[in-house]
Every structure is written in C-alpha cells, then in structure tokens.
Image (cartoon, rainbow, N blue to C red; front, side, top):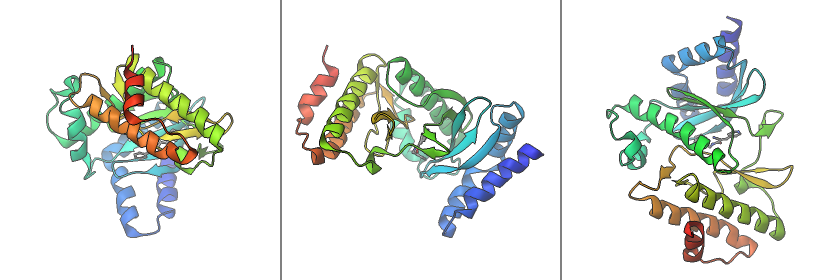
Length: 255
Ligand SMILES: N#C/C(=C\c1ccncc1)C(=O)NCc1ccccc1
C-alpha cells in the first residue's frame, strides 16, 4: 500500500503538471489498469523503489524517473491506446525477427518494447553509449537514468555548443553510427538531435530511443541509414560541418 501510494502519487504528480485536458488524456492512457498491475508487481519485486515524475512525453510512450534498488531508473511506458502504433508497422512487420506476431495492438506494442530492449543491448555491446538496458515487461521498458538529481541530461537539440565542441560530438556520433552498423548490425532509423542526449560532464553523446531501430536484413535499412545521415548533417551544418551525405553514408558502411 505504501508503494502503491507512491505510484499513485507519481500519477498525481505527473497529472498535476498537466496544463490542458489533451495531455491529461494522453497521460491517462499510459497508466491503464494492466500497466499499473505490472508497475505494482515490479514494485513488489523491488525492481522499482519509487516512481518519480514524467521525464518526457511522446505520442507513443512516456518516460518516467524512478528510483531502483541501486541506481536511478528511466521507465518508458508505451501507450496501449496509442494511435501511432500503425507507424510502428512499417518497421516491425518486415523485420524477420517479428513476422510471426499476431496483428493485435498489444502484441505489436509488447514486441516493440522487447525490440527496444534488445536493440539497446546490441548497441551497448557494440560500444555505443546508450542507457543501460535493464528489463522489458509487456509495454514497460526499464533502463538506466541518464541524468543527475532527477533531471535528465539535455537533448542535443537543447545543448549550446562551440564549433569545436560540436565537431568532436559529431565525430563520436558518426563513430557510433558506424559501430551500430558494422558491429551491432543495426540502423537507429530515427536518429536526430531529438534522440541524442549530451552528458554535460564530458560533452559526449548518448543514443536513446531505439524501438524503431532495424537490422540490416530489413528491406529499408539503408534508406533509414541515409535519412539518419541527412538528419545529423542538417543539424551540424549550423556549426560549419560540411560533409556530404553520400560520403558519410559510405564511410559508415566502409569495410
Ligand atoms: N528513452 C528515453 C528518453 C529519455 C531518457 C532520459 C534519461 N535517461 C534515459 C532515457 C526520452 O526522452 N525519449 C524520448 C521519447 C520518445 C518517445 C516517447 C517518449 C519519450
């Protein structure tokens, strides 16, 4: 009951911050009864000591801060009532790893959550800096919290950089794209300044949101890679970086 109150208070806290009713509806969908049951179970198992507030809210999921037994956690909860799960089809239905799932909304969301955990593990073992993946349970993904004092590290989008700082971050991002491709056999497929955190202690990038990442067997993998390359070059052009997309595209895939 104490733990349940903490989760309920997290609900209230995240609601309290709601300004307009739409967001309230959005938040409401995340904490549906099945999701609450899983959170209570994880809490009773000691995986989650206390739920915190919402770190970020997207169309298809919300990320919450939480205290774990030994480290801070980020809890990503995929919305079952999400309207954008159709968009997931493009990535998941052609992925040989998931062709056998029944086309039921929940199954797609659960498979997507499992895929994000798997992709984070593969990225990490390839040497790409990502939040430490901890577990996936139905529509809930638990990972290491990347931030300090309950405040997440800033997105690349919101980080002020000098040109030299930007250049060194750009070089690491390209190296991570190469490691993902050559060693993890993955393409991020949604890489942009919105899905890269910057660790302010050493100005290094952290890749997040790998639910949509695909293996190189996916028929559109190279298209997605080219789009990631274009996104990154578009963002870094403001710092005087002039690499050509086709050159970067080749460099990432080169033997
Ligand atoms: N993962 C993750 C995120 C942050 C994060 C911070 C600190 N530690 C770990 C993860 C995040 O904001 N993702 C964006 C997003 C996408 C889709 C729906 C909601 C939110």
